[in-house]
Length: 207
Image (tube, rainbow, N blue to C red; front, side, top):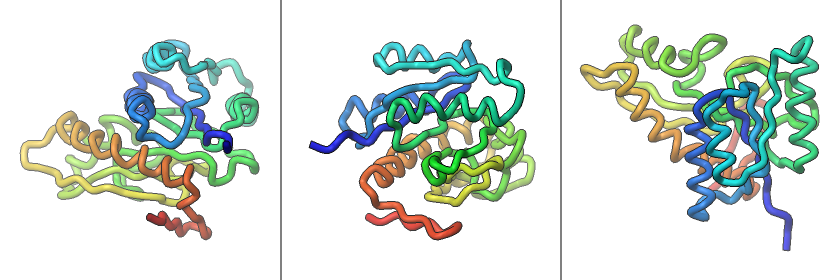
């Protein structure tokens, strides 16, 4: 029997994305096994979700490292040790440098339609408020491979959400997060099943 496809989930805060993945796994709707959860924040609420699900955790505080290179190496060493096939960012708010052996093996989900409203400083409610302030009629979420820049790697999948009259950052966020909860496990499953191919910036997701 082949070894299970393993993921490590990186978090910084409440862990709502992690909670969703744990629920998918419990319902046998996630092809991957969650091998480990890593947080850069010792106070991250999402660590409790991992503990309840009996998933191993590590805290790797970025403040303990002299530079980005050292912090990035500290993040990926335990991923290697756990045999992780894919690293999944779930509300992870620190930039890391992607080592060569993890090229196209790290993914992130961003709550806008990249390349709009993304990059350093664009996270959480800030993104949704910026969308509303600009007067956009459509927003959504994007799953992408991670490279050495914020929200820059090749796009794997996107879902759109209509902006409604009277929306606040909170109401828009709720509808977009509902889409995130569907699209992220779908992409993870596709990668685990070998249905994703990458050619430079063009990503094909086969059914």
